Length: 325
Ligand SMILES: Cc1cc2nc3c(=O)[nH]c(=O)nc-3n(C[C@H](O)[C@H](O)[C@H](O)COP(=O)(O)OP(=O)(O)OC[C@H]3O[C@@H](n4cnc5c(N)ncnc54)[C@H](O)[C@@H]3O)c2cc1C
Image (cartoon, rainbow, N blue to C red; front, side, top):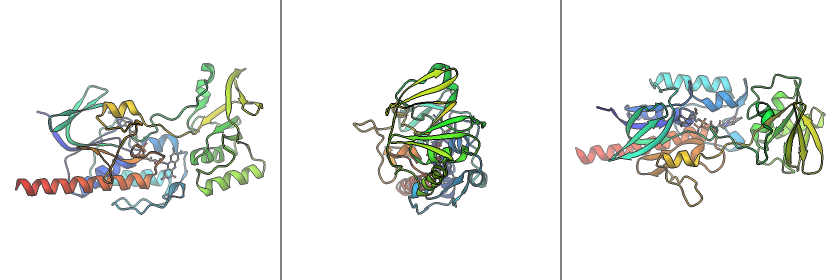
């Protein structure tokens, strides 16, 4: 017979890690964690450059941590170490290389189906898949011959290239700043002012621009791209045409609506997932981390979601035990 889990957590990023660790701390030991990549925190591993400073109050949004994971300002590496320790200490054995494709109501339970055709049963589901599995793409076409040079991270930037970084948030600022010493970098944002990023990141960018180390293309958009001898020929809306070896798109991520629908997650009229103050979406289904918010979240917010959810589940559990005793 199939084992029935109290909670199945989908995704082992900060939100999934916090949910599973808090669950153990609150005494809910029958936990399943399913992660599609081969390790936890895939977004951090993929999108954060090595030694990247990790801010607790990301984007300047102050978060009062409620749970048991002592996250503080650090680096990519110290953050991953913190999560390694939390998982080890709480004996969480996530199932890696396990991508969930569907969640179906099954009597009082939920049936979870993975892409490799495994099936699990759980009383509660926590969807903690983040948004970076589906990074936002530009509306214009990228020449198929140059697809490999249109990236969402700086992992392939090896230096000595003309690189265009497109975006207006912290990731774009950090990427441009991080690669500018080894490359000729242009930063393009469609608005005149960068208002969405942490002031510290904007200052770094502006200082470099003032010193002529990064070129700014603010208040202009890109109309189209062409391949010219293996380079991107970029047509800007102000009529300028420039050439680059590589383009980094740091445009954030989008909510994977179809996936959420397939996972029995309730969406509103605008196809956005609904959550209450306990991160509850519908009976037995919770959303944690970036996927629970309209705009980009943060690690600290994701950790708090995990704590909120488990407090709610533990409370429900207590009531259930009290009634059945
Ligand atoms: C470049 C960049 C820099 C950032 N810097 C900071 C910073 O300094 N400080 C800060 O607080 N925040 C920062 N953030 C934001 C932060 O990374 C996110 O808010 C945080 O990672 C959200 O955690 P999460 O658990 O919700 O999602 P994620 O971290 O995206 O984790 C989701 C996990 O779910 C897994 N998954 C996805 N789909 C499935 C599936 N179908 N089945 C199973 N598993 C699945 C993924 O592989 C992943 O491991 C940054 C983001 C970016 C992109």
